[in-house]
Image (tube, rainbow, N blue to C red; front, side):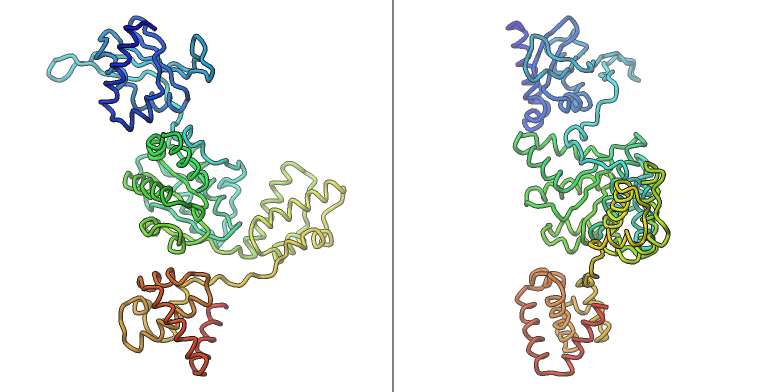
Length: 476
C-alpha cells in the first residue's frame, strides 16, 4: 500500500469517525484495514465474519460515501475476512460489493443511489451471540398438551406462528413453572418453529448465555455491537431468567427488553417463579415482565403423565422397533412417578436400556425394580404470598386490597398482621420482600407484625385455632 493510499485511508477513517460517532466507530471500524485500491474498487478487510456481516448490512453505503468524498471514481467496496495469521493476501469469503447507480428524481435531476448487491447477510445477531444449543427433539410436535399447560402451549404457538409486521398480542410472554414441567421444551419449540419459516430472526438464549455475551462484549469493548445485535432480533427467547445476576447485566437486560417491546418485537421468557417473586431483579424489570401475559404451567396430572410416557415410548420405538412397554407398566409409571417430566423420560430410557442390554421384555416387576429411586415422596405444597392474602381476606371478610392499603382500622390491622405472620412462617421470603408485597411496607413493620401474632397465639386460644385453620387451608 502506497503512502498516498495510506493517507487517503486515514482521511476516510476520520470521515467515518465524524459521521457515525466515536462509540460506533470503535465498535465497528477500529479493526478494519485497507488492503488495496484498484481503479473503481477498494478492498477492505475485517477480522471476523460478524463484523463483515454487520458492516455489509448497516454501514456499506456509509463507507462507500466516505471513500467517494476522497475518490469520486470509487463505485465499489469489497469487504473480506482476513486470516488470523496475516498472509500477503487476505483469506477471502463472499465478496460484498456495493455499487452506485444513477436514478432520476421527480425534479429531473440525476442523483446517486447507493445499493448493496450482496446476498442477504448472515444474521449478525446469531453470529454475535451464537445462541444457546437447541435440542432437535424439543418441538411442538413432541410436546404433549394437558390441562396444566394448555394456555402456555396455545400462547407459545401464537408467538411461533406470527409473521414479521404482525401486531404483537401479548408482550412479553412470560411462562413460569417448576423443574421439568416443560418450560424449556416450549421455548425451544418456539425457536425451532420461528426459524424454520425463515422470515423472522428468532434467538434462544439462556440467562447464563446472555450474561456471558454481555460480559464478553464489555471486555472486548464491543458492548455497543452486542446491544445493536440483540435489538435487531424479531423474537428474543430467554430461558431460566431466575439466574440473571449482576446490576449492569440486569440494567442491560431491562434496556433491551424495553427497546424490543417498544419496537413491537416479541419477547418470550421462562423462569421457575412469577415475576413478582424474582427478588434479585430490579423493580422496573419485574413491572415490565408482569405487564405482558404471565402463564403458569402447573404440575403434571396423571392423565398428562401417561400421555408423556406413551409419546416417549413411540419416539424410542422409531429407533428400536421391538421395544414395547405393556399398558399396565405405563399405568404404574404414570401413577407413581409424579415429580416431573424428566423423571418420566428417564424411566423410559432405563426400561429401554435394560430390555436391550439384557434382551428381556419389559415387565411390571422389572419396572418396579428399575425406577424405584424415581418414586419420590410428595413434596409439600409451595405456598405463595398471594394465596395467603386471598385466604386471610376471605377468613376475615375483608378484601385483598384492604390488606395492602394504609388503612389502620382494627378490622384490617389484625388480618394484615396475621397474613404477614403466615407469609414469614410458611414461605422462604425475606422480611423486606414480604413488606414490599404488602403495599411497600418497611421490613420493621413486618417484624413487628410477626412478633405481635407470635405473642398473641401463645396466650389467645381462639386466635391460635384461627391461625392453624388458615395454615391447613393453605397446605391442602
